[in-house]
Length: 498
Image (cartoon, rainbow, N blue to C red; front, side, top):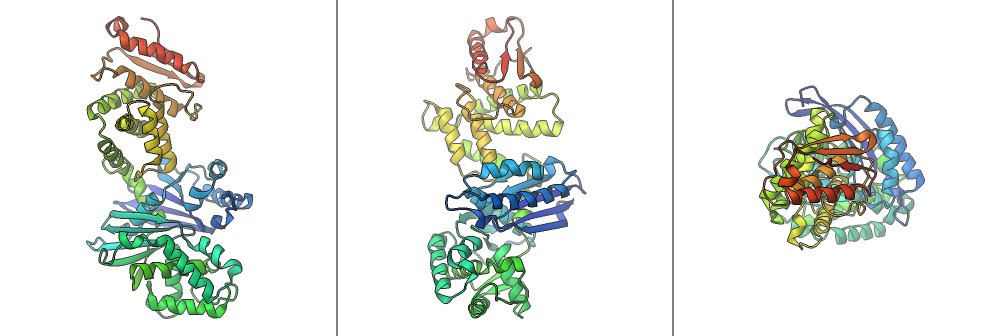
């Protein structure tokens, strides 16, 4: 990306949706615009964990406004991520299907640990470079993320299902405050967060930072009341709790520095924050400027190059962990990428490189299931990817990779995949052909081989030089079987007789 490039991050949080737009300048991203809307999707989950129609409509309306502002941005310049509420929502696919045309860009539902990693990246990039060991805490609407890190490296990451919106709904219904409710809320929060004591022990960090939401709101109130700016202390939390108890309800709460949209969830937020302070022995916490959306922006930069793309590192780690045949993986990858380049001749160069990289990941991992069992190893591999802790990947992105691994051999009808997506189909076909051509675990003879795609009529034609089928009868037989496999899909593969 060149200096001056505009980048945008959309954060679909449980309490608020945020849009951050920045301009790239020598590796740094400087804010040019920031929009925030209180959507409160977190309190729009019903008893069956479905988003209500009202909650979905609030989200769609906000995203439509964001989408208007993002008109003219390229796909590579925008990333939207969704967190705990959409991780939980059973009908999230319905919401996402309606959200895409509103926003104009796909939305990645990220795992809790991936959210934690991106939060740390956002905080660390907004702090001076330092060798200090940092604890970063982000109390969101329905989850709390904790990270131990140093400089730009997140070392320990975890996400807990406790947050300001969820705890306010459960322990402070109707916004009523009393000492018994706060005591119960803190005990319940500690029960969820209890394992954090072992992951983030005293002495494991030097400075504690609080990102976004609750910590920022508390720091603003304390600063307005004369406490040190940008700092949350235990004494300050005690003072603030006393103010809430005296007010008895959110409606009657009058505090300088508190925004109206924070009033309804402050009870839950403070109870969780006090629990964090108690469990980890924190005496003071600095309010950080960086947040999830900033981490998303810098991650867009990292994804531009394979050498800085964390997803590539994750793929390499998984390949090593499951002891794949590295030589065969490279063989299949090289063949699949060559065929994909032929089949995708109309794609822009940048798009081609991006899809080839993802095809390479599928090739590198297509045999990871063999570590479990050779029988149906493609199914084992797909299961691993759907359930792996894979830093850098969003859940839908990882599932798409698992579909390629699942579909690289065997029947195609088993795939719950979108066969109307031409790029996915091209990736799948090229991976399957590469596995066939490399079946003998040696470099295939590709001289004179050419694949052409006519996506408008859902057809591929694979041409081979005269004499190829005679020289490689087993490969030719497998290609004839592949032609039959594609007949059971909306697509046709043709391998003309030489």
